[in-house]
View 1: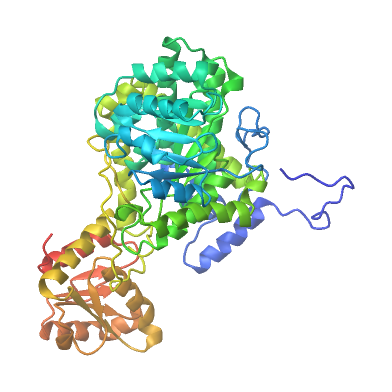
View 2: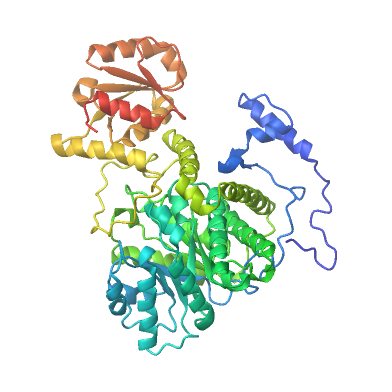
Length: 603
């Protein structure tokens, strides 16, 4: 929060106060020049951005945008951090994920900046008997180990505890999480997993391993099924409450039960939404602990993973930028541990270079950018505080919906949760199709001549439950059709771009059309004549003024030259013989799919 200096100096003291209405009038004047005749609050609303969950980001936030007092770091409601010191001592825990039994990769990560290990064990991961070999040479009293073993959690946990004992690691020195998450496994696979082993492991950790937690509340299955930030929060709360009930029945008190849970969330390239989500998550869990009668146990331990949904298979190098922004947001949001997925995560098994870039992303932000030296750097921002509050309310509302359905197990098994997530994803998929949510390198600025990045196959992830979606999936399907056509015929499907008039008149729409069709794997041709292009369809690109003068004649000439379908780049108008229009906001996926169909490019 901003604090005035003791001498009372107010830097804005010599300037007159500007009422909010005056700013709105200035905004209205600017909008009027662009053809929007709105006044007052409507002018401000015109500049607002719609988010999921019914939230909106306004263009201006002031001290009048009230939000509840966030408190202090380390104190309830823990909005500003679960610990008073935050991550200032050594930065957040840099946690690398491993899905195969590669001891050299594990040691290489730990020797070069990684501080803890996240191991996928059992089905789709490292075999339980291989844990000993994978951890050979690892200083287990220094490097925490987090397991993700699904229904193999009990044997995997017992094997890890055996390794601790065999190597002489004191029980109070063991750190990490045994990773029991029966509801998360059910969400992934659709198969029920017995909760009794998780409760037994929790009792064991509470009594004998003070540095180990037994359960993970993993919200990634709901994020990866297309859920919004509020839905991710609501699902994590409902899962956490379900585990509190199970652990209470197993004999643990609320404080002991809370101490056995670690929460896992996704970080996206929407940095402010991610920061607000992590802050809201701590506030909401603190409220749960308070209602359960243990307010001091409400400090949420957070493991944050860069979003798999945002990772693209085309132009995967851009994933480095996405992951950097997401990691920054996770750190600024107060995450205790951060896993940066390698940029080639969506392509198969990450190579050594990709793992190096992933771990160095955190290292640069901690050691060079000093991001962890400030506790809750976004705190006090009127925008972030308001967004945190709005997201907390939306998340709590979704949590209450799940509880009304009978709790998390019932919501999963009834299919209601799956339908809610599917509706959210359907709405977002519409934005992606219309490029209202652009994907650099995929729906915007694609590069058809890029050399494919090939990786060894990774173990198949757990499936059978909630779907796993990706932002690029619709465009990936289009590009795959183009690739198959290239392999079969030696060339990609083509479209001829007919530029009318000087460069100043046609460049903007020519560039737009070129990007649009390349997003579907269709090669734009701008040189020569239509007959020389090898294309069967064409796009007119120019200004509205030149369209009025020349479009009719040019379309007639193109069709006489053999064009079966002629587009016009611009808003729909009354131009004779134009078959379709492409413009900002059109359904690009539908346009491209139909175009490939007409060109005979098979699905």
